[in-house]
Image (cartoon, rainbow, N blue to C red; front, top):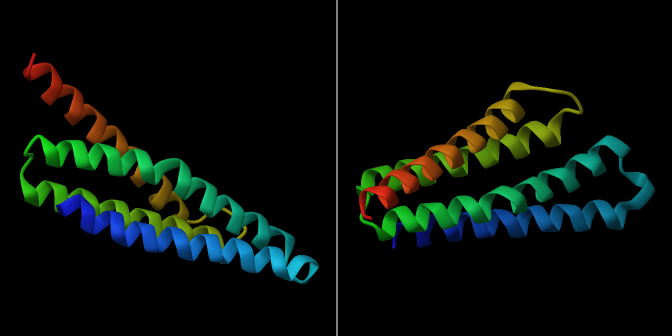
Length: 124
């Protein structure tokens, strides 16, 4: 049930990001080109990464990984996605929030993947 909480938060973030895309599209030429592209990429990156991360989080919760680790990973995922969105939305170039958000998400998904493999192999 822990994953359900984080899925809810991230689901609301997804709706917010989708509305940002809609807003940019409705504004058309009134929006700066880099900002419109950034909004689209933030939402696309979110949709690419969050579902897999939530599936892995749920699987780790299902196999009874300690609840504090599930909360830690859920909190980190939420923070990383927020940082990525902030970094992409406020600056057309490379910046630390964007870097930390993207790389943090990749590391977290990798860590959850490795944990899933280790737990899966140990239960053969």
